Amino acid sequence: MSTVIFQGNDRVQVLSPQDRGLIYGDGLFETLRASRGDLPWWRAHWRRLQQGAERLGLALPDEGMIHAAAKELLDARSQVLKIILTRGESGRGYLPVTGPATCILSTHPLPPPIAEPLRLHWCTTPIAQQPVLAGMKHLNRLENVLARRECADTGHDEGLMRDREGHVVCATAANVFVYAGGQWHTPELSQCGIAGIAREHLLSMLEHVHIGPLTRAGMEAADAVFLCNAVRGIMEVRRIGSVPINGHADLDALQQRFLDAHPFFADE
Image (cartoon, rainbow, N blue to C red; front, side, top):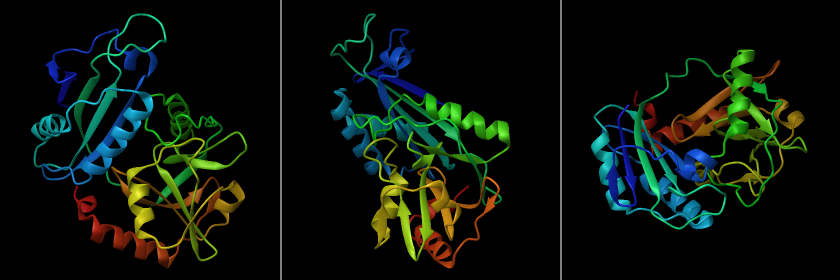
């Protein structure tokens, strides 16, 4: 792993123990797939980071500087770039103090290829509704941490998270799409969840998508289910708990269209 840290537009060697990202989770992050030294979805990720920074009142460093520093960290391999943006240092207490933000860039290996369609766990950890933070990829992700531990403990590849009303919101690290009744469906995210970059691309590719509540019964009766994120792309699901999902030709066709449009997801 390679890492570089900025305070404002200045490089520093270490992260301050008083950084609000460390103390309060006061910040945002982006996880990008890099391919052959390039970052194909950079603009979409930076736009979401910029929108989140505006909502939280964070100072965003210069895009050109951060992009150049990110490219310096990359090599010819396919890998993952992570960007963390925090409010920076402050004294004790919740009141945010205006100052230079902290930006951390780091590179990581791609996760291993997925050999088989996913097996999902119904997570018992609920995801809280907080419309002020909905859609953003903020640093407060303890719900996802606990839910992901559930998946590991039960031997599942991933897990589905629901709100307190039982509506499906997301997987622990991906968005959800369902094919049922000849139409694609995906959860509405105005109350909680992350508006993913892969989800954004797929919504632009699909002509008719119903964005609204998804239930456990609806998912288990679906013709096809997949998860998506900006590192893995489309991940087909063939079992939710004890219920098999048969799959559908429309998902096969969508996967091919997605790879044709974004071939770097085929690189390993």
